[in-house]
Image (cartoon, rainbow, N blue to C red; front, side, top):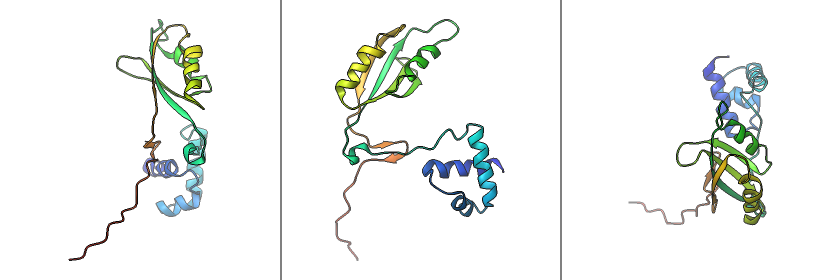
Length: 164
């Protein structure tokens, strides 16, 4: 299958992983078997890493606290920041680790059930790691959009329609 069609399949699945091969085939005007083969190939080569459910925990009624933690690290010869990043991403509380430019080297996204739990993770697990020089924590106060999903709720427009 050509690259453009594969890219279109990925964009459809990125928006909704439950879209069936039959629906994708109809949307792209291609054969269902071609879509199935393309998906299987992209799964086996790691292009499609997994399928994910995006959950609004607030709407479910369960509190989750997220924090961005910027970490200043001294790089090591020949491995740079990779080994420290690996140690950090192995913690189950860590959702993401990015090497970034700026005042800090790594940006870590952490979750917990309470702010106290996240603070304890930073103080007891993250900050004591070798070569971690400093951390800077920012708690997420409100999510507006994440992973392409809009969380902000807007009021329906209740104004009367004016006709000339």
